[in-house]
Image 1 (cartoon, helix red, strand yellow):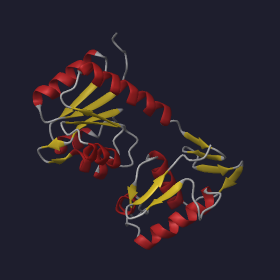
Image 2 (cartoon, rainbow, N blue to C red):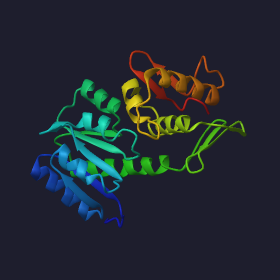
Image 3 (cartoon, rainbow, N blue to C red):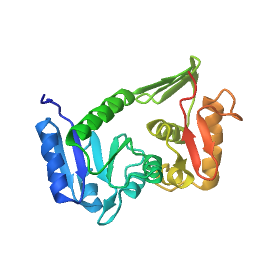
Image 4 (cartoon, rainbow, N blue to C red):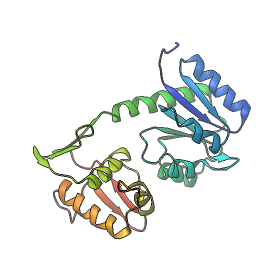
Length: 231
């Protein structure tokens, strides 16, 4: 049944026949489709806010997973990877890069549409403007954090770091990624030591036991990950 939905989907796939086929199927379902055949073309499409991105891994000007990490990281847009690579290692790399789901070629268009619907439903549920977990509540619009009903003051840098974690829950964020995405008003990148201090201060404000964090987990040798471990 045709959906009447004003949702924008970007298809990044260099196989023109497959790109056109996906676009046609999505158009029939009522989606507004944007098409790109390379990472360069995809970047120009991002001026439009997308509700979902279908991203091929093997593209003529780069690896889709690098695009996902370098360009899309931190942006609240779900990504479904399209690839012929179906090994467990490739799938793990895709999820570590930040994709929401994964489909291997060749695939059924019906299955693709079902996956798209599922990812969009999860995204809409996760995109609410208030995060609630246990006694921790964060309002994205007012930038207010409460813990156990008590207000917690955050600096601007701590707000950016917290929101970045919350937009990427369950994803390992490398130190390099965090350093590149958290900057001051003059867009000077924060130093590695500043990141350590900010992580430590944020843990003191959100964790019951900062020395044994339940939310901001250290992934040794890689970086950090936010886990919804409390209830």
